[in-house]
Image (tube, rainbow, N blue to C red; front, side, top):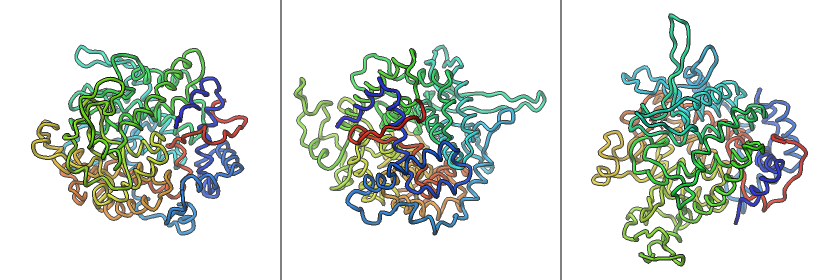
Length: 556
Ligand code: GLC
């Protein structure tokens, strides 16, 4: 199956990109009433899209592709909860807390700080606006019809991209986006200034590879949600996208289309054995490439970038779907692999030694279900499960529909391990003892079942919910949200939970962690109105479905 035939067509036809991108929204607009009821969320353009979606039979599309075989327990979230929806008392509290975390630059809101934890003595850098942390905040604001803060954030970070970035005497690539920034208020001069961190202050001095990808993904979410094409079309935004992608699309010594990374370059920003080709970055890379493809102009500068993107997407999806995918069958094949194979006929291309397969994975793997493993490189497969990469793979349609379903099957059948009492484990399983010493370098924060090492992160709830809606399994999201609702507010919105079941508030977890708050709000809003999913999800296999011609949409 080749999902990029359409992409290739896009090189020559601008309009088909728009169609590709609009199609996914239309299929989700199964309940127009909700969108109209929602205050301020859609402008006139969106409302007209809405009726187009309906004319195309959005409901049919939603149901036929998202509930194959009439999966039991499936009902569209909108239809089941529309009449019974009573705002949970936590929602108002969450909005209040989210608004408290807003950061202003010269009177304009430009982001949200990572945590507003007065009780904590150590502020560290939690008083900064992190790019990745702001994503769920941004989505919450967009879903609530408040796009200004998102636009300001996109522009502010774009400005920061233009800074010269150095670590000691070494200069970083032009396209690098900051991990975080801080607004400094000078009460005497009455001026605001910004300080940014591109990795030169971060623990471990690693540049955030995910920031640029999130920036592109957010630019599309903003465009999709507001219908305001003018921001993405500015020469500044076009250049910003090209610079980010230039960092990743250049040719070098790579033999794989995946992106080679240092440990700690993403949400897991400490040494955790994710160096190499971590799934989180590969999934975000894929999604950012697809978002950029829909937004880049076909002008002289954009054209070359677009061609490169299309080629890379082609190779990347093949590589990921073939080599990162693990299910019962694949595990059995690897278990029986021959080693030391040479030449093109090799089956075990990366020379993975079957003895290196960890014991736990044989028990963990259900008969039905599968996932993208953490990392694949020569003689090394990291069999750990990582939540973010797998959810983003579903949202970006990096996973085929079958793979997406299999990921959800796995979550369902390994609920106790992956969700337990608090959604959702960032990674599974934890590494312990000797392995922990070697892999983390004896990191006292990443002890087993804590923080990045098998800790449970409420922020991941929004990604799980989005993946559930996309795959037509909203009941899984409801179950997870219920768990979160039983603890989050009472525990003051912790950053993470510890323990095999995620029962304990994390040892060093901040309270009032903004993305825990925003993640909950986004999950609730999406479940109530699944049409929101369109801003963070991309449809796939377009050429397998008839292309619907329409005159104008968001780029042509
Ligand atoms: C921690 C997390 C990182 C997050 C930051 C701010 O360092 O590992 O992902 O962005 O806190 O919340």
